[in-house]
Length: 229
Image 1 (spheres, rainbow, N blue to C red):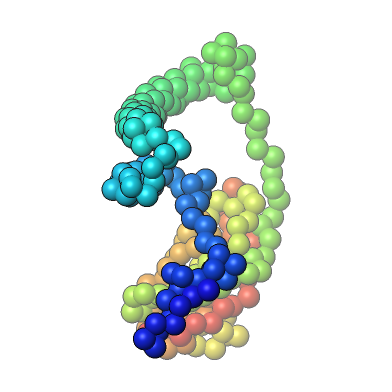
Image 2: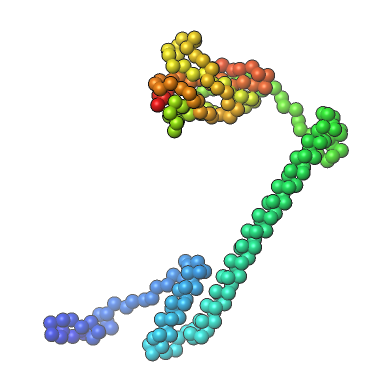
């Protein structure tokens, strides 16, 4: 049992039956190798400094020190190998980019010589691109969205992609959007987003139509409203 001495409790004299049994904690299988080596060095230092307590350690401290040195050596070798791998991957990609450029130029030359003749293209061991089929009239764009731009007098506009579209034409309106004469050309885009600039502050309505390969526009989208700063 513990001893009450001069008004204080001395737990050092507590019975083994009443003292809480504690266990060490390391979590070595959750540590990366660098942290594992640091942890090993710390444990080695502590046990060597308290050799009178840890009289016959398993493993011995010289053996632990040797194993830690081996781990440090392997870590250093791995880092050198990683740096070499990074350099090798970069060199490989640079070489691949040169070949891509070479083949693109060869493709242009073959198309020039073949002048559309599939038999000549096949002689260069290149595939023949299938002619694009007509996609028909452009559909009405249904999901035009506007948002304030980071710049004054501008509005960001986005819409969904349209299969077969070669370009998108935009119109803007600052008056009554139900009056056709109030709409005016605002720009053209080749992808399904753009920023309209040079707009007066206040309400603006925007609509978009898609143009196909035959340059024929589809119907106008519904108007999307935004407030220009």
